[in-house]
Image (cartoon, rainbow, N blue to C red; front, side, top):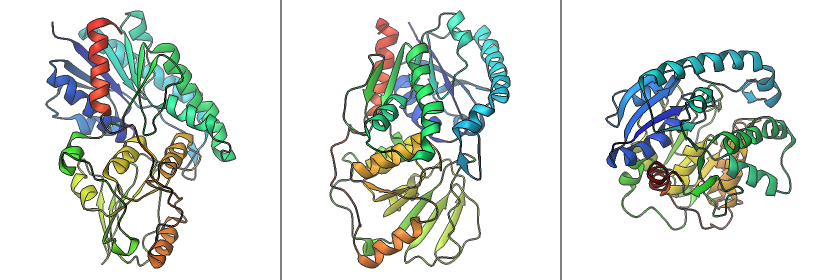
Length: 366
């Protein structure tokens, strides 16, 4: 019997869509019929994807902030607008469920679940909040500006999934055991196109010396909180490709705007500058490239992801004001200053592991 899955994906950025698509590819190959309910960038990303039997639109939840900084208190203060959005999203889901009878709903950063629960549709989350909570609570010190976002948003995210999901696949770069039985730790989810382009054996070994760097990619978030790094007033000693932002090209800087496919640029790059979304972090670690992670200010998950990259020996935590200075200083010293020794990771088979867990649940209810 053919199984039917409904993916509900927050399309505010691109990372949720790309990691869900990596899982969809494996499910589709196993004969699962896939329907997608998404928003924003997700609608553009999933248009004409052969794995998707139908694509449907809904509104997107959001974080609130000021001056490019995410604020837990401002997000909480937007509860009225978020409640109105939740009603709209719930209505879109109810309308879709009149047409579809999915065997399971798979959520990525979506929370309008009451129509699913009324119809007793099992819910599986793709979510790393369990990893973020563990990393945050295990660290001896966390910056004060991210603490309110952690407790108001990230910890609440963990509690939501623990309460309302039947199973959560929890991608992680660091080896370890999940903090609750509902969460299944898996490896990092990396796009199939990235894995195939990198070859059967992922890159390994030490980083090249900074003065051997010829190409750098600034891969900035597709969300409204993307970092605004000043590239116009610095003459960097290598070529820079900027993805996710428009601008005027110069001798050393090329702007590509928002790309649906950035694989060639990622493979070409000797060094990466990224925001702290988990999908971007996962691919940077998989590609074994020195990475400067610039978390969105005030965003507890992005800061924790960035610190993980540093702790595992794959890069550095930076911000939009000091990242270029850090890069120039290391280039001049021809040394990756402060780079920690590399640690073992969970690997990059997360898409296969997530699909296997979903198929097992569909076949056996666990």
